[in-house]
Length: 252
Ligand SMILES: Nc1ncnc2c1ncn2[C@@H]1O[C@H](COP(=O)(O)OP(=O)(O)OP(=O)(O)O)[C@@H](O)[C@H]1O
Ligand SMILES: [Mg+2]
Image (cartoon, rainbow, N blue to C red; front, side, top):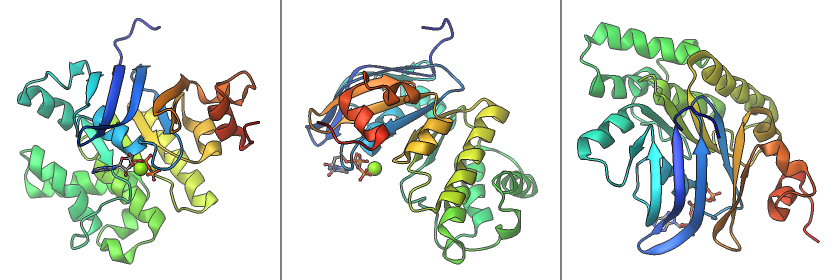
């Protein structure tokens, strides 16, 4: 374990809905500036876990610290500080359909930064240019492709220069080339800004390429199966279901 304070620390975390546990036994210790992938079968609780890790929902039990703050016991002001330093791309991008891409990115800036409109517009333009959407700033979400919508969602998540970003299935539904470009963008964000990135993904090649660590959620047991660098899951001695997931093999 490194001597650097963790960006994310979970101990025996249990997450679920309305008193029903979906995933238990989640233990994670992630240093700043790393990329963590959350993987597992559909419906196993990846999005549920990610919302708890990001402080958007409360865990049912256990402990979860983000940016050194225990999110369960934090005051409203402490939680607000953590949320202000976090960026989110929800499953499906969730852009506001009646706003242009520029206006979508301006929204968090206007909410949190006391800047004149011109400077807010410039910051939004910078973030959209960063994700390769300089030519589409004045388009509505209905006028752009799925890949562009993902990138616009990432630009919005980047608006406030977050220390940590949560991306729920950023490459779902994209062709391999567009998905590869998104991987490059995610790596660029990590390398340029030192941003910690926590993402949910089903794309094994992408995870092997960009993630430093991977959490495998086991839907059969309802418990975290393994937490390791993704390439470790390629080994036949790895957690059997995580190994099967990564090598697309059958469990015998
Ligand atoms: N808001 C909610 N209220 C109640 N149950 C929910 C809610 N959201 C999700 N669930 C349930 O929690 C379980 C986990 O859902 P979750 O969305 O976290 O899975 P997932 O791993 O992200 O799936 P997918 O790969 O399909 O996105 C499912 O059984 C789902 O029906
Ligand atoms: Mg999900």
